[in-house]
Figure 1 (spheres, rainbow, N blue to C red):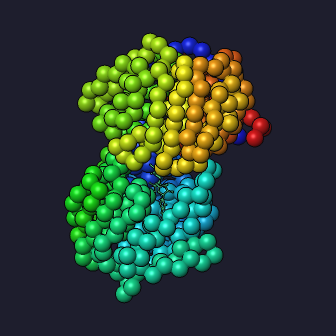
Figure 2 (cartoon, rainbow, N blue to C red; figure 1 turned 45 degrees about the vertical axis):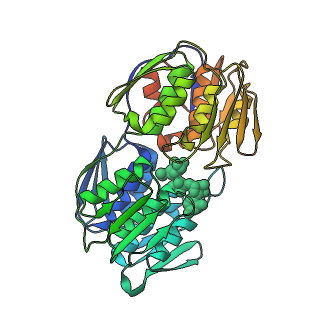
Figure 3 (cartoon, rainbow, N blue to C red; figure 1 turned 90 degrees about the horizontal axis):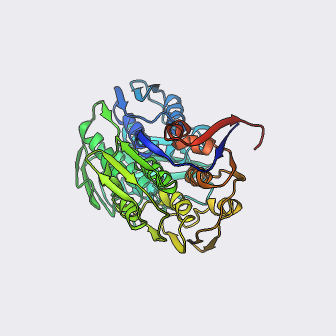
Amino acid sequence: MDKFVIEGGGKLNGKIKVSGSKNCSIALIPAMLLAPGTYTLSNTPNLRDVWTLSRLMSELGAFCELNGNDLFVDTRNANSTYASYEQVKRMRASFYVLGPILARHGEAKVSLPGGCAWGPRPVDLHLKGMEKLGAEIEIESGYVIAKAKNGKLEGAKIHFDISSVGATGNVLMAATLAKGTTKISNAALEPEITALGRFLIKMGAKIDGLGTSTIEIEGVDELKAVNETNIPDRIEAATFLIAAAMTQGKIELTNVNPYHLAAVIDKLEEAGCEIDVNQDTIVLTMNDKPKPTDVITSVYPGFPTDVQAQWNAFMLLADGTSKITDNIYTDRFKHVPELNRLGADIELVDNCAIINGGKKLSGATVMSSDLRASAALVLAGLIAEGNTDLLRIYHLDRGYELMENKLLDLGANIKRVKTEEF
Ligand code: UD1
């Protein structure tokens, strides 16, 4: 098992290239099950969640090979309709394979993904969507067994009560091969869904309304394999912007889409950061402590829940009280007790963290519990006095490509150490 040892103090300065989006690649790869063929997905982040999904794809009969940031996938023999618990349990988003398998083969048996470290994460909307498309669904021994009536899904009108990235993506993929037209209302607007839709269109799907809350899909008989370039990771970008701001440094991000980060940039400016944006670069300069802010997470284009924990770490520096309310995942606050162990003063009231900033932070041993909580703890370690040992960084490795190398390039004092500690 690995841990990070971080010595706090010092500014982060320099330039880094943002990696490809984890969440987008994790949606695009299952889409490749819709059409047998060979694909190359460039700008794929080389990280644990992609490896996990590649293993699941192999279980389904595909061949996956990651060379640097080019992922080669051959789905010509991906004929299995069975996604085992062994593979799905490693990553919730594996559930994305349900839609493509069901659409192409008329049936699927996919393990239910279970919860998350911070609480339950239901898939009822995914299942409701598949049922509307004409699938009969049974839950048996922890598996979803789905069968399309007459062997083929049929287009339908589907309204989601909650805007869900995963359910929208899953239904979008399934509907591409359904007979007739599907209309999804209250569809997710997240850039990863728009990118998935664009990829499907490139494969031959007929889709209208991407990036709006109503998406219309006219089913086609078959799709074809194509190559694609993944979009930049907006959450990794936000994490590094906040890291630099916390150390009162200066950072230039390249390979980034500033448009995807509008809500985060707006809040960074409110906190006192100077930001220069170009087409695919962002330069952030911070010369002071941040001002306290109130943040409420919401669906895109609102402030992302995936940046909530990192913002929490940032606000530890503000003199005064800040609030962060998470309306998407109301239990996602595992980082709070760990930040408090470093000397922070954060109170949790329901789904709102109240941060009394300006307290002295001193290094301690802290524990990662999930991906973004781990990122928040790295950021706090960068400003704490002394050494912070961050355990269980396998959570972080799920979603950040070479995080410590990028931080080292920016001048941080961080190292990865093998440890027996758990
Ligand atoms: C995706 C992202 C995750 C991000 C989240 C919200 C991936 C791989 N993961 O997760 O990083 O934090 O979007 O931006 O892209 N819900 C239901 N029933 C369902 C599905 C969702 O009630 O069937 C609820 C969830 O509990 C949550 C809300 O809908 O409150 C949004 O979740 P959703 O957008 O589905 O998140 P994911 O796709 O799982």
